[in-house]
Length: 148
Length: 50
Image 1: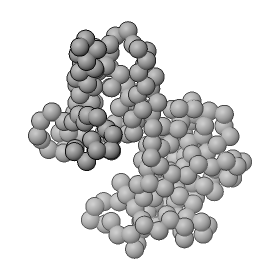
Image 2: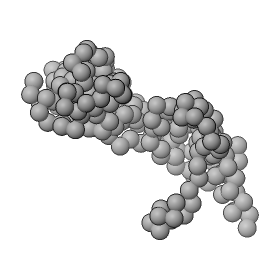
Image 3: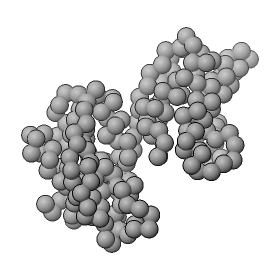
Image 4: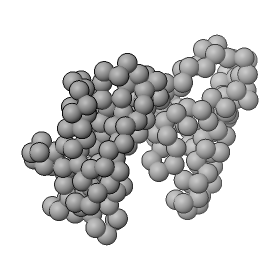
């Protein structure tokens, strides 16, 4: 029997790969001899970079950028295993999780940090970008992000 | 759940096995996912034997 496990991440608790690992462990108690294929998935929000990096054997690149409230945050983009494509998630630089609930106000938050991530990847010579725009702290994507 | 059944999803299993706080659910996520997965697998195995 071949079992394909393709979960998204669980917000605030498990990465997609960790979810897949636990599902495999549970199934193995019943079907120890089955063949398991773990394929972590993502929807463009938090965890998108982790899933793409895990799927391609890539790496994470940390970059300090402007956070959603203008403060510096340590964000990241992913580099695919072949080193040719950068995977960027808006959640890393401009994510809702970076703003305390009492300060969440889409009229004040900015996506500038996502633009800085894009610029950082371009400056590193990368010409193929995959950008996930889920999980952001704003409801306007284009203005600040592309106004660098 | 009836809604998803009408769209071709045959069965739905909850990862949570008991009522509790969000914090506890997040802390126990790994254990709960594993236990729910074990039960789904056991259900599949029973079906194979019918």
